[in-house]
Image 1 (cartoon, rainbow, N blue to C red):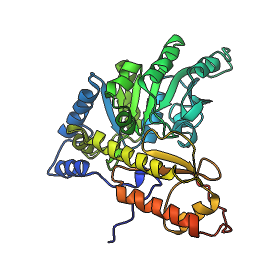
Image 2: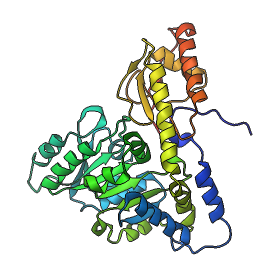
Image 3: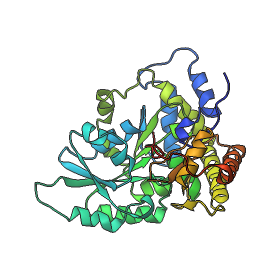
Image 4: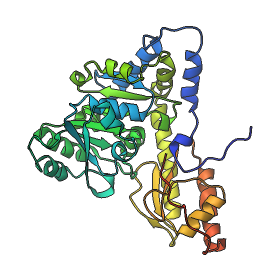
Length: 361
């Protein structure tokens, strides 16, 4: 079968990284206990504790939707609410799963520049109403890196934590691209998690090279009480759990998770640097992790897709998200940029522009 071209639509398009693949293959040799009682799951959990330099509770689930929804449900009751940025994945792309798995906990949205929550907005929303008819705010969810490709610094997270602590709220982190954020900041993982007040992290693996599975990491261990029952009830307890956890061993043991994230970030930086040179294009948000948000003329979007490139345009007419993955190479970036430059000269301006605005997957 011919190798497929690497695209810029999503880091979910990428395959399994070598380290995860090797660990998965090794875990497939012979028998091992089921339902998480295997040595691979124990080692993966211990490696996460070493990574965060803290004794934390670790659970493995099939995907980010389950990780976010179940962890948020563990933070409160059905009559509570969760505050997040208006572009957050838990609000825009989880199909109501946080509300469903919490039996009705409402998601309330906040504005903020470049996809980041404004701490002052938290207080405004909490104090907006205090009567029994309003879903009582219970938690704040931050996305790291954000849905707009930006990254919260430790200082920014601590400012959010200070406000949540003052208001008696818990702090949840959707870390689908947590690895990219850490690689971008060059900090210790603990500096942007429990040291910044994060109670629970949903650590994404699939966008960083694993085949399937996210880790739910409780730094506030009391909140993990009976979380295993939540996982079982929601169909997230894998009978052959080692196939979810073994790839984590491969990625964590020798720092592959950070190397791959740094590669994706570096390719996004190269893509950014090449595209911003073109006067016909406009950068929409700062490039801080592995995504570049660029505004292109609609006819150029159509022409690039006709040339075989895949990318998402869900920000608005002309807005494109170009996402680099762990396996994106310099030649991939330069091939895309070369087509952009060529089509800016050659492509007709009057081609149909309908259907240029697609939601991401």
